[in-house]
Image 1 (cartoon, rainbow, N blue to C red):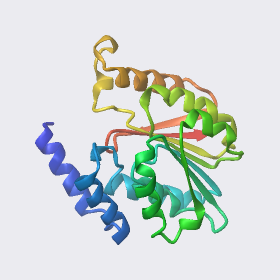
Image 2 (cartoon, helix red, strand yellow):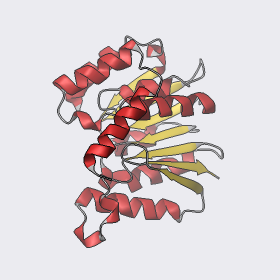
Image 3 (cartoon, rainbow, N blue to C red):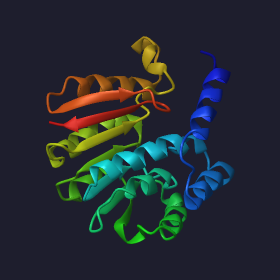
Length: 214
């Protein structure tokens, strides 16, 4: 399947997915107009999937690793119980003001806590249990992030990992893969063989891995 066909399929999926809220549409548009590498944003279809998943789970605590401009953050927050909290971690301090401004426009603003800094330092400070984790940060640290959160996720909780197909480079021989693709390949192999989780890899966007804690 060629790139043009994939593009048309993506657009078809967007047309047949519930419309974005006004705030999500604003984030989507402004990210593409004003922010470097806007393709890092989860976007319409994946965002709605995250929203539905969170609503089904109704988590009390969510941790997101990699905020970017906050699109996925707000989608995940839609499923929080009324007393729940979402910790979102972003290493790029230049995005902090933008993200907080978007969060302040949300009905969930009091339930979203933005942490600016290195997730490897911040994750140990977040108390368990964590019902839902979304890993979408730097790829070489996916394994480290997993190792830091797995024991904080209770049985029946979930860890989601984004970009687990990494532009389809995971299909290439490992010696030909980029650094990020090789890190993702290693991560996928590790969690697929971890008896503590039950994995499901979906070819949604750039690949979304769902790990149920057993």
